[in-house]
Length: 247
Image (cartoon, helix red, strand yellow):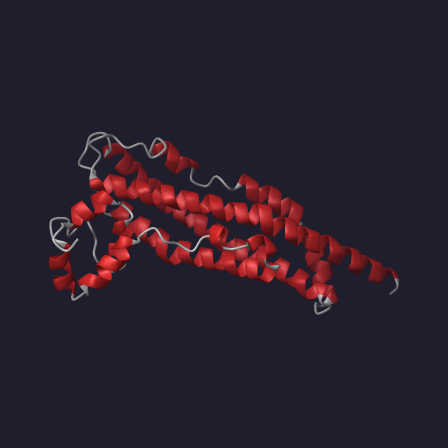
């Protein structure tokens, strides 16, 4: 790999652009450099960079974990960790790819313009959705867990039960799941022409992988988190209202 150009390395596997980015190497700025040259310029260990480039697709995914058997607090921690990776790592990287996008190709000139308008709007909406989920849904589920252990404030619990409905939240969540429909439409489902520029290939690869991560993330929420939380909610409600009859 040492003697190969950055463009060649990324052409072989588009995900390598993400690895290089976190070593401070933007593939579109160093495309003609060899890996050895750019590592020397950046003061990086070539062997370390090669080690990371050899396994660029290794990610912490729910398929590696028996999440269905996990308690609710650990499932929430897993989801919050995924949110952190999305907001602090993957989305800033994709955002930088879109900002620096220069298609120089008639088939992608309009797509470049559209993505530069749509992606920041998608990003703003997505981050708002994540923070709202953590501040409302996760907070309510944690309160239910406390209540099941007899540690919740009864007045706060009553207020939250009256205000919240996990069933309603689950329905709204499923309706919000297809957040990347607009981006898919612009990119024609990430279709690549035979002569697509390398920058387009990298952007489409990252958008597609991000969408796959979102689908897996939504599956954890819809098929594991919500059913477990709704069962807990029913249990807490039953105990709460039974107890209130005797007071």
